[in-house]
Image 1 (cartoon, rainbow, N blue to C red):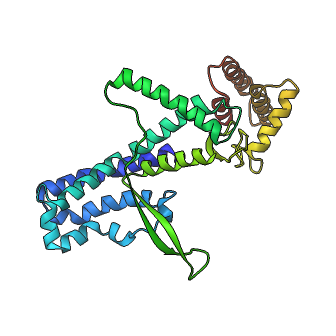
Image 2 (image 1 turned 90 degrees about the vertical axis):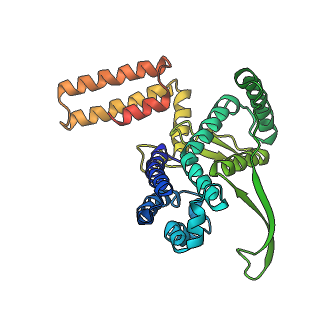
Image 3 (image 1 turned 135 degrees about the horizontal axis):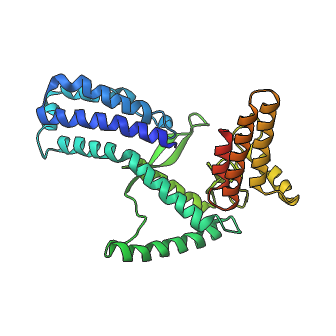
Length: 312
């Protein structure tokens, strides 16, 4: 999930939160439509997200929550009575909205750090290796928690309601099937659960060494490149780019040198076509060399170098 999406959610939630708090303070029924419009702006972003777009949600109720509340006089009165169950429900709803984007950022940061520090260097890619890596991570977090937070222990416990029910088989119509239904209070709780269940099964997200995005590494399969189209390419995948880099390394060329050669050739072509003056050409090549030296010195990563060169 891109940070741009989370920022958009934050913006709409702040506007909605301000309007809703004013509504509950002044109890002004004329503000209902405005509050609902602000909430709908939040829904427009959230309901388009992966996972949410596949859920059987009551969209009509979500987009008409406050007008429906206003139409029910008893519920309307209860909503504004401090301490009532309806009032608590709306306040909890608002708190969850306020925390939505931040909870995703926290999940993303924790998991990215764990994978980078404890899983990236593994020589085996299976559930046993992941269990060993997680045990080390867990122990380090427990020790860090004692030092930083005292009596507040580190844990990965998540509240979840589980029900067992019967459903119609999605593929074989008319055939019944048993199903486990889980209810989470936050999307992040589901993401943590799904992530850890994946590790137990031997599947792990890994950051692609070419594009920098995460992809799912299936049990027993060890690759550091995803199969998506590589940045600045139209057909070639990151995996193919990775294979090319591997061959180049055999010839003594580093990934940094490969990226420099690409941008140099691109600038050379633009110069030959008259799109760059002699001064512009010399300045661009000099700048490319500066960034190459920084990458070779470890001041910037290969991925950062690739992004910089893509803009030149």
